[in-house]
Image (cartoon, rainbow, N blue to C red):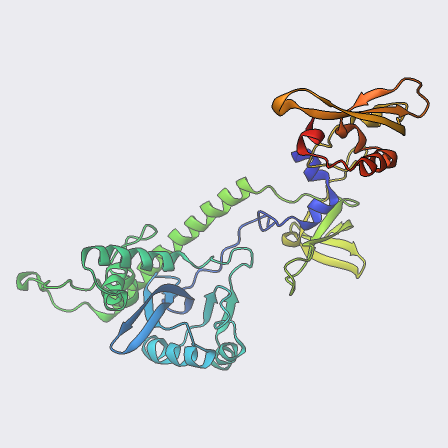
Length: 394
């Protein structure tokens, strides 16, 4: 069955891909300083009302180097691009400054023309997550939700009031990638906990400014090295699970359609011929619109059908024994009708002659439903007979 489906041209052109088609996993460049590169998205939460204001989501802003998280309670319902820009300016930019780049998923507010204009006027580069992976920036969102869930399990309340404490715990916790907390990577020191006071006997005076910046720079460099190592391991694992698309000149391929308005259109066009390998991940394809250079993410192999194509039925046709009878019996004349059996098994049979046959036979009512039996119907009408269920099922 799987082989038949894999060779079916209709199935190949309509089946959604279970992978992006990329030969390698490419990570976004690692930033060199905190808050120069951000990941930003919304996380939907329970609708609550606090001090007369309604909240149903939070705007999550994450520093891509340190992992420092800023979460701003918002109300996604009724929120437009202009209000989002105001929240971003008042709650982030005025405290942390303007970033160089923003990475986000394909949220319609963050990708709106209004927000794009703000980024363009401020010199901020915008990047969207991969279209086949709509939650490619969701790690921080999951961390915030899990922290809120644990906090509210111990201290029942609403998530808006619990959010600052949850963020403080996340930003004060060293991650799996680096040995330093996000707070230390951003501000150069770990924050004192509630009730913590440095002992007086250990006080040795302030750290020299040059030493401070040198230490912070070394910590940032260490984090960058560990992130590079993590990305390298992830790329190696991805390439092992996703073999490279290896094409030769003359091979036939399907070309993935770009997203359109209708979700019911076929997803792949083709098959088309591959003319030239431009690079390891780009190929020259001969299409009806002309020769195009396309990335591997929009291509997949064409599997040619083998053998004779026959229609496949998802049901079993009922066996009709009369269809295999060489001689069709056509009713000639009804001689009489008579009762047979006793009690509940009592039913009628008709004594009839068939065309081309000399001897009459006794037949139940079911023998006349698949034949041209107008004489039988006329006989019953003349006799005033009303057929019963017992006559038909015998």
